[in-house]
Length: 123
Image (cartoon, rainbow, N blue to C red; front, side, top):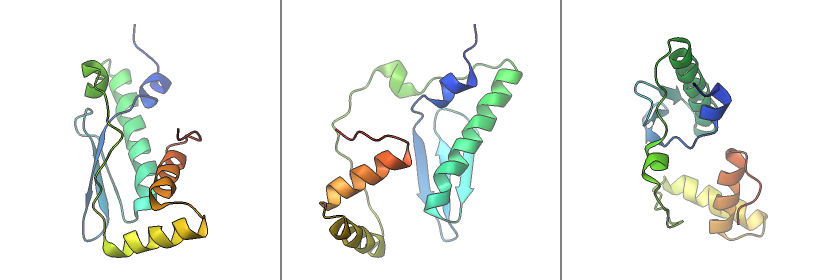
């Protein structure tokens, strides 16, 4: 029995993001050919979600198998640590925003990421 589109949309598919001169390119790693592009990083995540939904809808209509994220299949554990490289100007902007929020840079980034994906609890 096939799962619903809502089921697949809630799964944590890994997304590879590649910055370019004109914007950002994203690829949903476990959905072959599922890509998105945006000229602004803030516009990229909605574009990824739209592309992912279209990919899954097409697969379900065509009765093709929708793969689950490999992390789920391998039952990986995570350390909670991520190394992120970014432009110096973005780093400076994040530091200034964290100060305005009276938060550490780490907590500001974690909270911002959680909000971006619809989470409210960052513990």
